[in-house]
Amino acid sequence: MSTSTSKLKDVLTTGEVAKICNVAPRTVSKWFDSGALHGYRIPGSKDRRIPLNQLIRFMKQHGMPLNGLMSGCSRILIVDDEADIVEVLEKILEDEAKYEVEVAKGGFAAGITAEKFRPHVILLDMHLSDVDGREVAKQVKNNSDLQLTKVIAMSGRMTEEESKGLLAGPFDGFLRKPFHVRQVIEAIEDAMAVVY
Image (cartoon, rainbow, N blue to C red):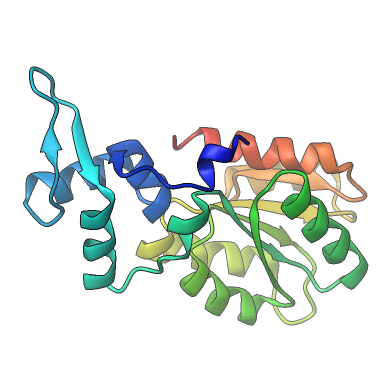
């Protein structure tokens, strides 16, 4: 990542606003076209531009978390109760991939954290002690505020068939434990590439 991400630009494209708010770019266009989000069009083109101060005003008005603004980086939620795995993952995803990372130890905590943090990707252990990973994934997918959040299943105990079955359901990726960190970053990038 270049240093430009630490200094936020004064004017943003609809794609950049979409990433910050974790919504689809067409949602941003709708906000713009309805007059809810103020900005301007580039003369002679359909491209819209949103001044940063207008975006902040809009986000505050609608109670959106502003934490995505400052970093402009991808937010990853790790849901796993194996402390050693979590520690390593969190450190590497923050230090090397420069993601913003939050951790939830169980399915119940995951729901609450996801609501607040609005992650772009959730790394979800399938064998949580308090709830089945599939349930957590379903809840995320059914939450209209988290429509664009990608869920990647993690497991060391599933057969090839079981893991294929997951991808037909509410999951956007699968990581077999133990995994290499490069695989985790690639899975996250792959999942996010679908949206932006």
